Image 1 (cartoon, one colour):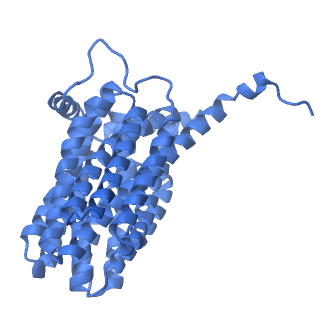
Image 2 (image 1 turned 180 degrees about the vertical axis):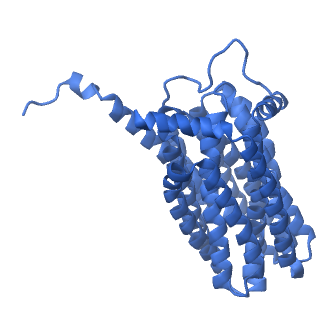
Image 3 (image 1 turned 120 degrees about the vertical axis):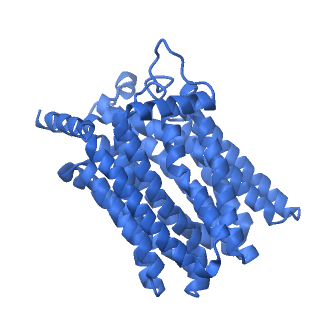
Amino acid sequence: MPRPTAATRRYRPAGAAERDWLLRCYLLRATDSLAAAVVMYAVPLLVLTLTRSPAWAGLAFLLEWLPRLIAIAGAGPIIDRRSPRVAVLTTSLLRAGAALATIAGLAAGAGPWLVLAFGVTAGMLAEGSFLANEAVGAEASRRAGDRAHRVQAVLTGTDQTALLIGPLIGGLLLLAGPALLLAAVAVLSTVTATVAATVRTHHPRLHLVTAEPAARYPLTALATGLGTLRRTPALAWLVGALACVNLASGLLQVSAPITVTRTLDHTSAAVGLVWSIAAALSLAAVATAHRAIDRWGLLAVGTASAAAMCAATIASALAPDLALYTTAVALLMAGEGAVTVVLRTARTRLIPERDFAATLATTVLLILAPLPLAGLLVALWPADHLRVLIATAGLVVAAGTWACFRGLRAHRTAWEHNDDAEQHLKAA
């Protein structure tokens, strides 16, 4: 058999090159999501462990998410002007540096405030890298054509896998102290930066070059995104629905350590177990979401998943023991995973490529805005009546979600047009 020449070694079929590029995108998403998940779940639990105060836990969640929203508003214009690959590389290196600096500060005798400051900083950086990864994922979806929802299912499954492993890693490392936990975050961030350096796109920037310049400043980018939402009612209603269900998700995220350790009288290790079991079910839901979308369409799957989330929120407030509580949280995360596939597929279809990151930042900002609100509600609400808050929020979220999906049905021509186009491509 003849040995390959230099020319044949350099040649790679287009299909193989595309698969290699897509695998690098998946790996980039995996390492970045895992680093973010470890920080997101470990920091509030560490604050609760150190202070023994539910109010402080809620405040920590609030302080963690408010700067994240600010980072989202500022990151969109930067990503539109720069390569998303450069954004992921930069944020990952900064997160690794922040973790190492925090380790040094703790060794020098700094107090718990330093850990909270790291959580805020890492959260802001995570949102920037998330937006950049979403821009890369949108490019992958556009390349996939009518199989876009399958690409988004893999990306969402990658996120859910990180949510499955992240709490376990964070909980185990936390037993050995914050230093080891922070060192793991630094290592994951360094790996992410290394992978980002190898990811290329066909164009230096993902938005189309037009006569109009991209939005350069946060307020301009916000106005651009809001203008897109105003011109695309289907996207606006979808964002509204996701904002509603995110309030339920946020309340469970911030209240789970309090409910498990105080109301249900279990150890902090049980908190990580609850989220890991829930993430496993969510991963299974994401794995089957693309088949459900193929059969019933985006709108039907999104409606059913949102309804499941609302029911799970109310059930979690009524659960008398850890097993039923875990079941309710798992149902909520399963619904959230399927809804995420629907959202990412829909906004890839509906958001124009020009100023994509600026518009994406606006939609993400609106969707995540209920999360700091959830932290504020838990911080102000009496801890002994926390379940009343969760149940009430579940009813409010159900009403808001129902109204938003009614609006979506009124503008379903935008969905049906895309679904018909997909069916035509499959038949061809």
